[in-house]
Length: 102
Image (tube, rainbow, N blue to C red; front, side, top):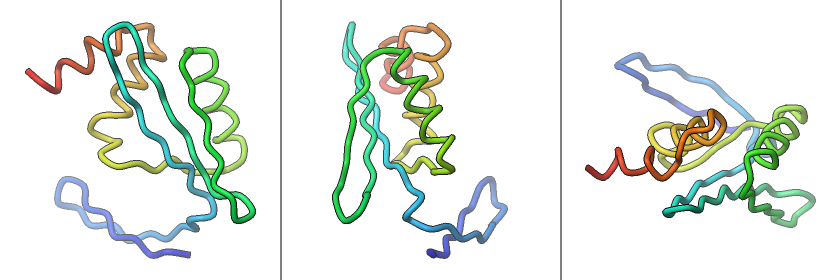
């Protein structure tokens, strides 16, 4: 178990979770193309998958959630989850990506 402190809008929360439940994810976006990578440690081996379709993304999220795992990432709240929302809601992820660089 790891103890983590989180601060959101000035409110500090302490919580703990097991890194054994963590699934790392990252999203990359290019014009007319996107990819979401997922990874986790399983039995001492790091396993990964790369997703490039909405249907596969929906299935991957369903499987991760169904196993009681948690998603972790770097800057995921401000960027990756916004891009995933766009993909899952039939928005252009490239256009969503551009809003971060204007």
